[in-house]
Amino acid sequence: MKKIEINIPGKEYPVYIGINIFDSLDKIIRSKKLFRNLFLVIDRNVMSLHREDIKRFTSNFSGKVAVHEFASSEAEKNFISLSKLVDDLIVKGFGRDTIIIAVGGGITGDIAGFAAATYMRGVKFIQVPTTLLAAVDSSIGGKTGINSGDTKNIVGAIYQPEFVLIDTEFLKTLPEEEIICGVGEIVKYAFLIDPKFFLTCKNYLPKLLKTDSAIVSKIIDTCISFKGDVVAEDEKENGLRKILNLGHTFAHAVEIEQNFRIKHGQAVIIGLVCALDLSKRIGLLDDKLFSEYLKLPLMLKDKILIRKFDAARIYEIMKRDKKGRDHKIKFVLLQDVGHVAVDVEVSESDVTQSIQQGLNYFIQQ
Ligand SMILES: NC(=O)c1ccc[n+]([C@@H]2O[C@H](COP(=O)([O-])OP(=O)(O)OC[C@H]3O[C@@H](n4cnc5c(N)ncnc54)[C@H](O)[C@@H]3O)[C@@H](O)[C@H]2O)c1
Image 1 (spheres, rainbow, N blue to C red):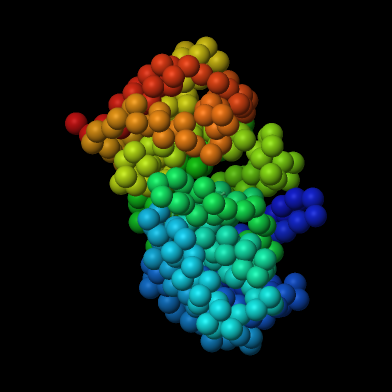
Image 2: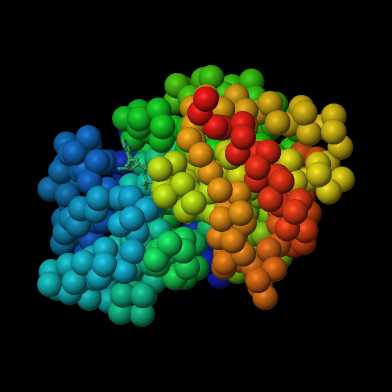
């Protein structure tokens, strides 16, 4: 089992990565002398696919355990689900000495984390990500939250877990569509980290899509270490952390405009293509690099298809994005691999043309 330290000032925590390490959860909780009142928030699909592992853990655990199943989807990442979760905590008699454990993808982690941040003004929290997207990205950094209406992650808190446990065995049951979503965030890191990692991602993409354990572990490790360093420097997203939003301003708006028919990670791939196009359009990224970089997200082009879209509506949704102040949209754009510009303001016409151009690659013929 590998251990990576996330060194957020005042809130350092480890991330454990390994194969078949879910059984170590009890031992880690014990070694950290954490409370022994566990409230597991589990994605319903994970529960049905890994019932034996979950049951073994809950029946062997010597403290109090309750299981709250959650049918994860963007439509369910809302106040109603949060309220059901909180009611369950109250009815089952969980107090301040509770640990909420999220076992699932990014949606389960976000809602369970927000419940942990707010229940009785904050109880302890552990993340057990079971999707590739959650393993490489959402389980680290402490962003938690829910959607309201059609605005994504508009209510939330930054709340760090006690630790994160990534058992890559969970990833084996992921459908291809979900692996592609995780690859979406990995492609983002390929642009952010350095040319060597960019090349690794490009070369190993086919193995990554087959969730080859060695490759997956290596890539999760690199992404987490990078995100951990960024978050340690700027937990509250006042500066450096903004770089992690590369492609996301487009992605969130595309997800909403497409009525969530495409998933978050798929939208991130589309968003990255739009961000590359916009970077080139305003002269930040040169044409040669643009053509070379575009090849990576477009390797996944046939796996993400949309029927039609309305570029003007996507632009309107972006204007409402919570990261925009005074209705000005601020972009994270790419100069070259490893170098991004943040808070870039661009004309409406350039943005709309990049939406048009970017989404055209994914239109179903
Ligand atoms: N907090 C953050 O920093 C952060 C970062 C990126 C994304 N996000 C959020 O994460 C969410 C997307 O996360 P996601 O892609 O993990 O979605 P998700 O949680 O909905 O999981 C995707 C699907 O995979 C299923 N699933 C989960 N684990 C499985 C397994 N091991 N085997 C088979 N099926 C499994 C789920 O039931 C679900 O149907 C979005 O809401 C996004 O806003 C948050």
